[in-house]
Length: 94
Length: 94
DNA sequence: TTTTTATTTCTATAATTATCGAACTAAAAG
DNA sequence: CTTTTAGTTCGATAATTATAGAAATAAAAA
Image (cartoon, rainbow over the protein chains, first blue to last red):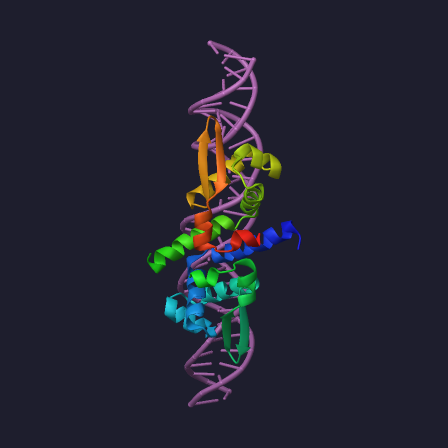
C-alpha cells in the first residue's frame, strides 16, 4: 500500500483508539475473550446505549472489530488481524 | 499504574498519533535514524514552521520524543522506551 | 549593534468530536 | 395485535483540534 494511504489508515485507527471509552470497550472484549453485545458492554461500563452504539460503529468502521447480527442483537468481537497488522503486540500490552 | 489512568495515558498517545502529519514526522525521524530540527522536518514535509512546532510540542508532551536544545535549534529524536511500552513492534511496522 | 536564523506563542478560523435523550426501526415475546 | 427488548439515528451542545500568518523571543553571525 502507498505510504500516504497507509498513514491515513493508521491515523484513522489511532484516532479510533484515542478515546478512553473505546479503549475500555476493547479491554472488555479482550478480557471476556468472546463476543459481546452493545447492551452488555454499556451496562458494564455505564455508558448510554446511543453512545455505545456510536463507538461500536467507529470500531467496526476501521476494522478493529467484527460484528455478527442475530435477531435484535449485535455481537462484537476483536478483529485480531487488524491489531496484528497495525499494532503488533498491543493487545498483549493491555 | 491504575487501569483508568493507563487508559487515559494510552488515549493521549493514540490521539497524538492520530494525525497524518505527526505520523509522517515519526516516520521521517525513524528513517533518518538521527536527531532532526523543526526546520529540517518542516522543509522535508512542506508544513509551516508554526505547525511543525505545534506537532513537536504534542509529541514531546506525551513522551514519544526526546528534545535537545542547542543554540537556536531544537533537536528531536524518537523516545524508544515509550514506543516499546505502549506500542511494542509499532516502529518496525512503519 | 544590527541582521539573520530558528523556534515559539498568539490570534483567528474551520472542522471534527463525544455525549445524551428522544424518536425511530425491527424483531421477539406475550 | 400489543408490548418489550436491542440497537440505530437525529438533534443539540460543548469541547477540542489543526492550520497558517503575524508578532515575539533568543541566539548566532555580520
